[in-house]
Length: 315
Ligand code: RIB
Ligand code: CA
Image (tube, rainbow, N blue to C red):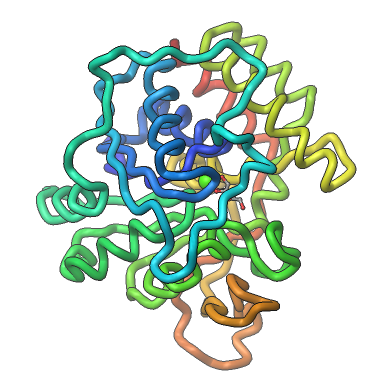
């Protein structure tokens, strides 16, 4: 079986951490590198968190790159209210880094361009944070489009409420200009928005079931989810918390778990009221060419069965 070559561009972030663990565990995925962006926390914290996650997994061999510390035009908006000051707060034991485990010298943008231009087979870009790094890479070298198989992103909301404003999902809200660079790139895009990620919810039963794998990674998953659940339980008044970012990796592993529709998507960039809204023409009323496969359904049971099995493979 040919592994899918991917670059995971992220802002860890509790759910980004689960996406990293799933990508590392899966035999279907060849994780070329992790690129970090400012989002859930500052870039200083997101890159440190990526190092911590790879250290915990004993995968210091996975190269990690620093990208943009702010959106293309707007100032950075972070989500400490969800992920804590560090961006990866838990009640678990602190993760200590080996002195020689550091961020690569090369910038994330140059890494993305190098890998896309140099790969003998098309690459999947998997952004799970604001789309700034992806947009900057496309702007610096538009020819990389020719070797990008698909962009599978976590972001947006087609027919449901936003989570940072009533109209917008966080990743798209933070950098709507970058989002439109991506949606207008002509590259094959699959959007894992809140419509589908709110159908993949962790709860205590799932957390305890995965923790019963009783390996370090699964215990770390449980520690992450215990902290991450606090915000969502308070906001949604339920014991369910949407597990956004791992949907991107799960889609690459088995896209039969998901259902969607190819439609036209464009992002509001400037309105104070609706900045970051993904305007999804689900009914095709404007008869514009579709530019995105918008995923709205998921088999949650199959997703968590996969996640538990994959995390059990880690150290
Ligand atoms: O809106 C949810 C998204 O924003 C997730 O990717 C989360 O990690 C944050 O980046
Ligand atoms: Ca994220």
